[in-house]
Image 1 (cartoon, rainbow, N blue to C red):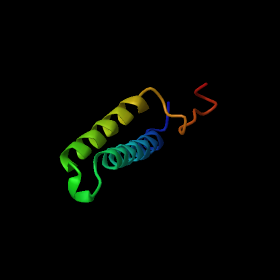
Image 2: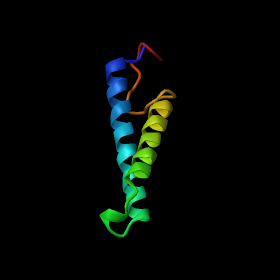
Image 3: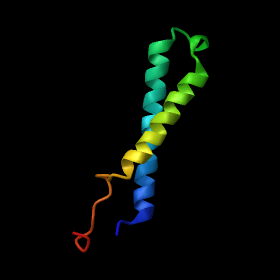
Image 4: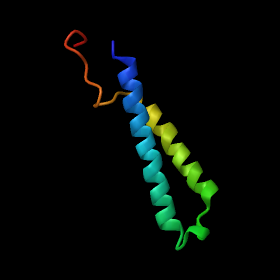
Length: 71
């Protein structure tokens, strides 16, 4: 069985990174100045990427290796 603390930490790190990447992409494409940013939409896009990252982590994370006993 996979170490759940290690899996949860790796999944959280990946989800936070995806959240940040989505926010950067949304802000970079949608605004010339910070006042033009639709922050609600940017947070919504980031939040959706966070949820998707957690769901994808359920399929497996390469950062969390299986021990020899699990193979």
